[in-house]
Image 1 (spheres, one colour):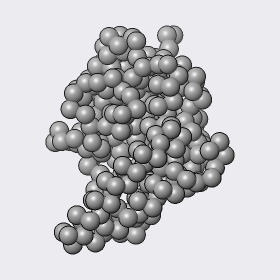
Image 2 (tube, helix red, strand yellow; image 1 turned 180 degrees about the horizontal axis):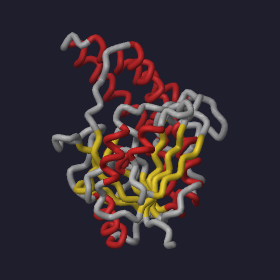
Image 3 (tube, helix red, strand yellow; image 1 turned 90 degrees about the vertical axis):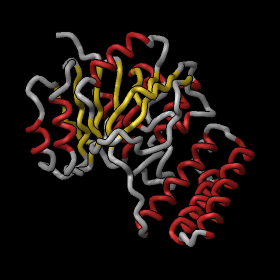
Image 4 (cartoon, helix red, strand yellow; image 1 turned 180 degrees about the vertical axis):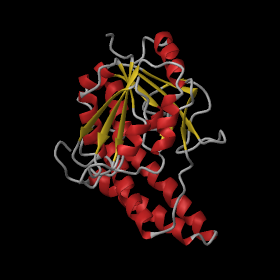
Length: 286
């Protein structure tokens, strides 16, 4: 039996409300030679309903992992058999012809180790980030607008060559740095001499991310900001670049103040401090 050409690594801590939508989108794929690795960090039995919805023809592996998104992805990578890997979140879903479209793109772009696209909601609106408007080579200057993890597809050998995801970065890492793991991963692949390309017509579905005005959102913003600052430090963006990013947030905070947007002012100030903390934090290999 030939190995699949694509491995989907889906990590979840048991947020099951939208998993049936993902399952339905896999059932209707027009090309079927892909596999699904579910990295489960939820209580036993939480995913039974989701797994029952998956088609019999789909090769599914369920593996366990300690908490932390980067840890979970690394566990999933060790179980992949395909040459290319995707990272759908448990609240993402695919159009019915996406896997078939990916097969064409992988054959067309053989010189690339990373292909990225955009996320759009059910109405076709861009979601979950800001994106470039046209196709481009991915580099240090534009990587921030070349997609989020749902729309990142990469060669398994490239991931292995750079050691997978940095487990000190990202949600659940247990460090100060609650974000940046996906961008760090892409930048390390590029630094290894491999190439990446952003394709705005490559679409993965994801709902709009709504910003809540509560303490939990501000706490998450702190971890994200610290992760972003750490990422800048790790990849040598320099004090000048950090200063520019701090200036932009300071201006945004002032404008929010004029508009009497108190929560946005607090969020921006948290980002100012968090980026500085993340950039200057003493940590192994700093």
